Image (cartoon, rainbow, N blue to C red; front, side):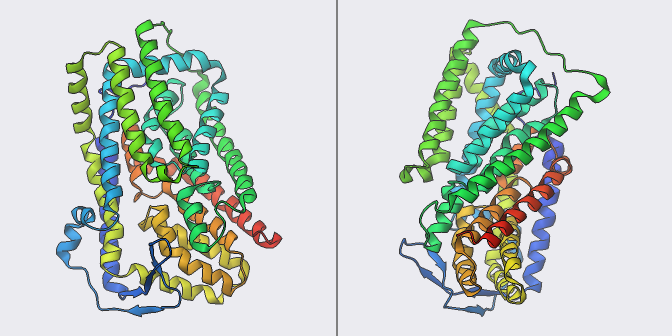
Length: 467
């Protein structure tokens, strides 16, 4: 078994690769502020109190530039603007994950849990792969979980290694799967839910095509995963050799505590799909439940309180480099917004669409959201920015708004697990000890196949009059 020592750590190689990539993006984005003229759309307050673009208010060019000092300090200044609460929540969430996993690793519970799973499912590991991937897709599709699933990623990555596969496969079974579910948007409150509300459509209406796309994407994902793991199983003609499992009653009690408490947190996240008041609290709930699960299970497994505290602090310190990555990635949107070129880019995109045939406009909306997701990872934030522009555009060209919502969901979701500006991806890559370059090499074929599949689904919806 391949094993990382000392719990979770952001590997130096992954960290440096991500730092270089994001720094290059920061420089290029800053350069755009000198090339693209500043401008902004008129904005209004909607019935729900949200600030949205006013399609009738028009676009106006403005005087604007971003001082060099603001660009230099942008990773810190992102904490001073609207929406900074989410960045702070993600950072706190990550520190909890790092501390808990280090404690679980040092008390031996993590290794015991993986050995138990491998002992039970080692001879049916392809079925296990299908079940785990389906679980993560459901979490993304029905409750809009994405960042909330990060605590489970290292478990699946370690499980993948124990089963004789690689770390990239573990990332695909977890993070890629939840990203695919999130993008299918079956009942995703943060993309489809918000977008439909802004477009004046009934919440989660038109669900049948999203359910169909969910299963088509799942089949493509399973085909991709099984094809890769079978290659790994057949390499050098060798089969994975599993360690002999020895039952430990104290560890079993610790596992029961961990699964029960964390399960309660996951159940709460599932309920958030039906209880609106819980939707803004899911990350906090998961973090608290995960912290509680880690503390209780480690103590029940035999770890002393002093040792637990020491391990937790060690884990928090080891994960601190990821905080810098998150702040740098978040600064991309800050640079565009403060440089006042984000609206200009949208204005150019809207003007470009007027010369396209109707069926191309749907794919163009998909493309615009894909591009904007590079700069703005939050699905809800993009909905408030784009839907007030997309809906009138759809009406002008007699395209069903429902189809535009599906294009929005696709554009928002899949690239979350590909773009280096997404905080959750950076965290997962660092925790799994997978460099960004390796992940791109592993996943780009799936992304291309999925892009083709979802584009065909959109065209299918257009030609049958989906609404």
